[in-house]
Image (cartoon, rainbow, N blue to C red):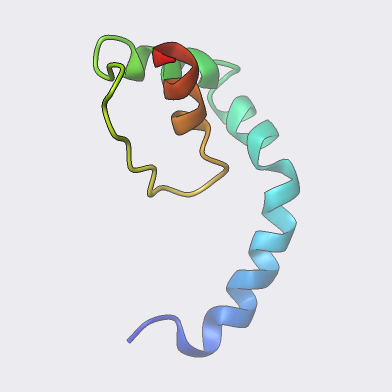
Length: 70
């Protein structure tokens, strides 16, 4: 199982997406990506909590949680 022979194609797509990932994310959320992250974390993540950021991207949720919770 897994991606097998498709790995090369996946790597090529990632090489194209990575440089514009944050910008596209902002566009598709109509510029509300940061607001949504803040709302998703505020009142739910507290100082001392441990966070596993196992999504894709650049760890923006973890960075936002660190900023909000010190």
